Every structure is written in structure tokens, then in C-alpha cells.
Image (cartoon, rainbow, N blue to C red):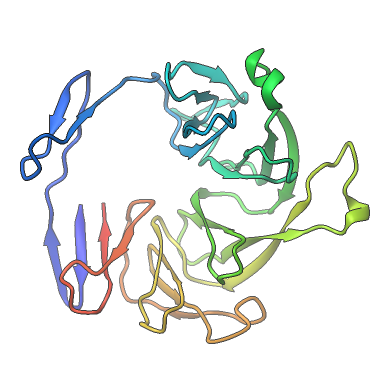
Amino acid sequence: MYFLRASALLFLCAFLVFGSMTLVQANEPGVKFDVLGLAIDVNEGIAAADVDQDGKMDLVAGRFWYRNGDWRARPLRQIDDWNGYVQSNGDYVFDVNQDGSPDVIAGSFIPTEIHWYENPGEKGLRLGQLWKQHLLLDSGQAQNEGGLLQDLDGDNVPELIINRWKKDTPMLVQRLAKKAPKAVTKSQPAKYELKTATLGEKGNGHGLAVGDLSGDGKLDVLVGQGWYEQPAENPWEQPWKFHQAWDLHASLPMIVVDLDTDGRNDLIFG
């Protein structure tokens, strides 16, 4: 793990914890963390949401969701194995059909389709039913490393920001937009659709983060080859300025934070 500041590159220590144990943070005596093994799986995505609407946060991760309390694996969707992984590059929670229950949006590494999985509600969850799969968009883009679901433009609706591991490829953002009422049917219950915005035609690579690097109060998008600066206005009607400030094979996510409190955000990456 590293952090990038102005012209310095510093090494930070990182720890991996396995098994059943209690962790105590050295500078906060009495704060303890119980590590629970939930599944043996090669899925790379995870999200937190109140899946069953009981007021407690549950977990969603690939083929299963885990109910707060007993944390048992409960069926969600079927995913093919692929190349030592599973063919899913993330789990993103959003109420796509606006029925009050969180659904799951997910794409893949090589397949170009992005699907949403419909929360079956109280009875379906209780019976362990699989969540119904619906096509949200065929992006036409493969080599998808993963993404972030975050509100970039401040309209209180998140965007799906997809990172590609291949460098010098277009950087795309999928915008969740309200559908026309007549387009919502029983067989097509989604009240949102994805609309593609291109930040730039060339500038991508393994690694993704969101944060304000320019200091203008707007969120920028960081990738393996540099960062895209959000325009002052109309962000979806024009390209974003690309700054080729580094060339990394970095983590997803990377983290943008002002570590040294100098008023400028730094970049932590693994």
C-alpha cells in the first residue's frame, strides 16, 4: 500500500487478518473487532444494505447475501466461474424499481452486459429464492476491472463508474436516469436506466478512485494512468480534462484523502 503526495511516494504497512480472532487497536484500548468467516469464495465484490428491511445492515457479496444476526449465506444470484475468479466484478446496491427494497446491480470482467437483480421481498427472501435477473445495459465494453457507485454530479443519484484494466482505452460512466413512465411495465419493472457518458477516449488502466484533486469542490475520477478533472458545469455534455500524472497498476478502490492536513488531497493505493 502506498500514498502519493505532490512529489513523494511513501510506503505504508498493510496487514491481512485471517481466521477467528479478536483484534484490539493499540491506541484505542477496549475497541474490539470479531472476525467472522462467512464464505469460501473468489468473488471480489461486496456491499452493505438493509436487504430484508428489518432496520439492520446486511451484506451482499456475489452469489449470496448475509443476514445481520446469524450471517448465514442466503441465495441471491448464479455466477459462472472464470479464470480462477467468478464472472462478476462488483456488487452495487440501488433500488432500481423503486419498491422500497434494495436491488443489486452487477457487471462482469469480460461479458459486456450489466444486469440488475430484483429483491424478491419478504416472502422470497424467507424462502431463499434467487433474485430475478434483468438486463440493464449492454455496454459493449469488455476488460472491465470493476467499478464504484457514487454520485459524481451532486444530483443525489449515483453514477456507475467502470474501470478497465487495459490502458489507453475510453473511460466511461454509466448514469442512472429515470425512465419515462410508459417504459415501465410488469416485465420491465426498472424505473431507472443506464445512460453512457464518456469522460475521455484515452486514459484508463487498473485502479479507480473518486475525490477532489483540483480543489474546486467537485469530484474528479482517478484511474491507473492519471485523473479526469470534472468540468465547472455540464459534466455530461463535454469531455473531462485528463491529467496523465502517473502510470500505475493500482488497487480498486484507491482512496483520496488529505493525510497530512495541508489542504490538498493525497492518494492511497495498493
